[in-house]
Length: 87
Image (cartoon, rainbow, N blue to C red; front, side, top):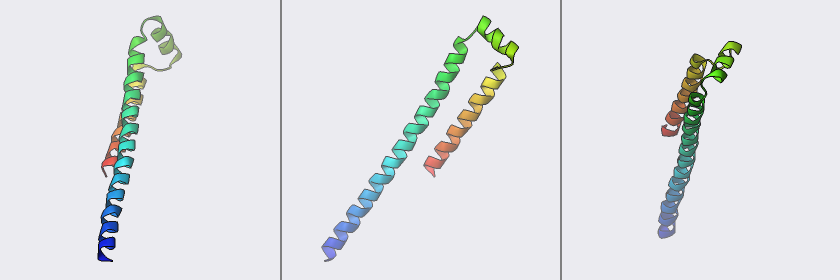
């Protein structure tokens, strides 16, 4: 009886550990995807130059300061998400 109890206790903690590790890995993958999305969005906005940029600024859309603020908000959200994963 003691052997069965000890074995079930050991494997129970092992399964709990594996489950928590699986969840944390999934959250880190989501964080990685969000960071790559920020970088991709930033790289795309850097490629836009010339006439398209002037037209957008004239229309009041996506000025560089607005883009920077939006990217900063996304990065802050990613940092909060990472802190939640660590917690």
